[in-house]
Figure 1 (cartoon, rainbow, N blue to C red):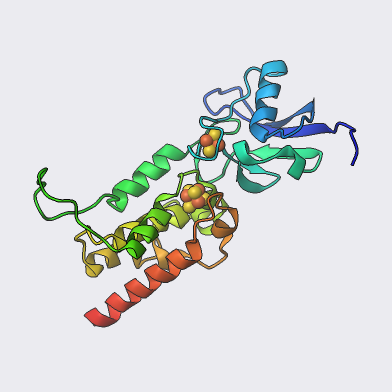
Figure 2 (cartoon, helix red, strand yellow; figure 1 turned 30 degrees about the vertical axis):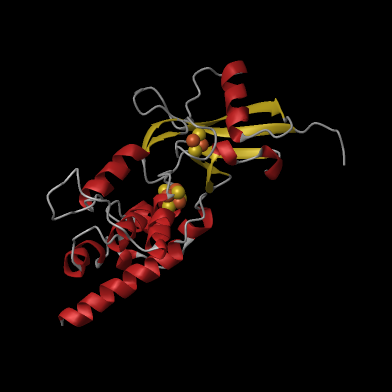
Length: 245
Ligand code: SF4
Ligand code: FES
């Protein structure tokens, strides 16, 4: 155990796509590490003391809002829950790929997630007219737990950024999108048939576009069971196809 304070060197991608004079480049900043320092704390200190124009996103600072995804030494991670103590003295930060760059480390994940939600119609499709006086429908504890598990996604985009397919095929639903589809397929309140789901899932944009590298599951900060999600989707989809044949 040593009390020596580490001097951290941050090499940070800089680019403002709105500024015609801006060129992508790396800026280097140095700060002293402090106990329990997160990347959020380090970037805030850099912005406060060295460069007020540095762009990055944070809101909750507690791994809930999904705003702070970035590449940390090449790996997608949440800045607010990454401790500098777990990193080497040189920390390279880039924005998440696969999303539109806003500036520096800030990307637009919202447009990707909205388009995915609209494409998969990620809401309950109920055939009964809404009756405010009706008793809430019951479901089994197992199904409720499985749906809850899928709903833990914070839409950080780390899985999308880590996915080789999503990086070259913007239409691919990737971990977050397929997890969302599975969540509604499991929901007994949703009236969509397996045949209807087949059109959404059984294509190169859906689960059959996955080539099995599974970086998504490695980087998901909420440790969602994405392998199980894909297995579930494949089983349901193939079952549908065989039955309808
Ligand atoms: Fe983030 Fe995991 Fe949701 Fe992907 S599945 S957006 S990595 S929380
Ligand atoms: Fe909300 Fe990191 S700031 S998840």
